[in-house]
Length: 243
Image (cartoon, rainbow, N blue to C red; front, side, top):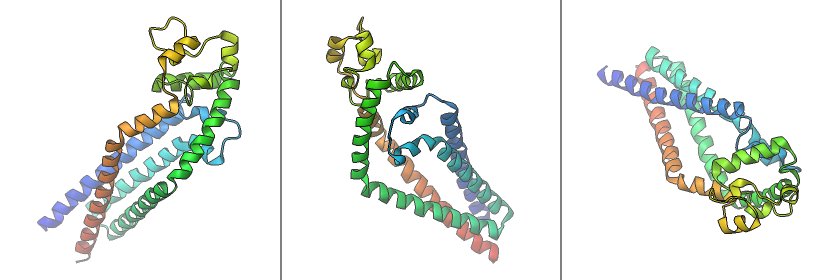
């Protein structure tokens, strides 16, 4: 009985963490949708963008759905442990098992199709560069999104400052966006951008991911371990309730 009570506490803690994680993801998803000028906003302005890439603009809805789902799973596990409901415990085990299998499958797919993703990003880079030459400084919303992106990542263009060379904006003003130069530059002209050598936004984004690779890997491993532990405890409680 004492052991059973301890397992209940463990189950409650596990599912409490899952519930909090779901609530956090839900909050991020809502923030992404509310913030109209987000890092993914420029994707909506790319002409002839691949359908797969266009779906990235719906990442906010995906985060909201995942957050709600995890919160419900955590709630279900807590209730099942407290009320000693075999139906809830079994449902919780099946749901978490499905989530775990989907996560493993997604990791395998990402690993296998990594070269295809690189090719897709190269094609996107060409389209983005063309959009910058035609729309930056002409389309107000497009310009605002890119200014926000470059400010956040401290970058210039998709590849580098050459994305703006011979663009509508440079032809009219003879200047480049201020983020393409150092803060000490008085005017951001061609000489200044060549001296500054500010990274392109794609490379800056890749660097950001690489800098947090260890953290992301740790979080992924932690989530997997939590799911395995939660499934194990739920099955033990399920068997004890039957007895």
